[in-house]
Length: 138
Image (cartoon, rainbow, N blue to C red; front, side, top):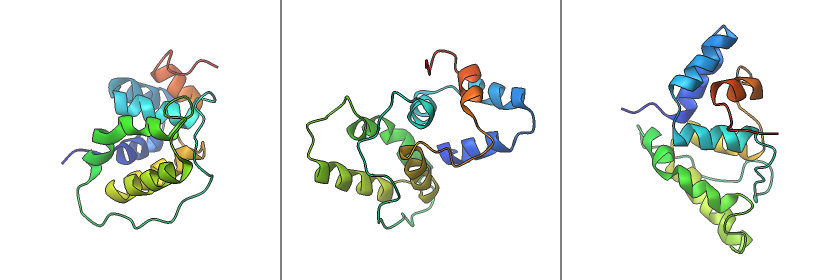
């Protein structure tokens, strides 16, 4: 079973020391992690979805942590600068379908980062900037 992005970030947020958090982010550097952290913290990343959690039916199949990792690059459909001509209704339907395919915790993570909120208080922009230098340039 693969650990999901939500579970990884939850573990990082519970680490006690700042340097431990930075080191964990650095040691687990991957494209999916970079995309999630940039989408959550980079002010240049603008989501093309309405704020709030859309109505969706959470996935009830167990061990779906791999789905978000596999489909992470599809987040570009929901971010300004990529596929801007996509019909807004279609974009929102696609997002709901994604939420219904991924693990329920990963769906919560996606809804939070879409609204530029990290669902874990223990992870900050500073942790991300030090753990993955160059990812976010303000």
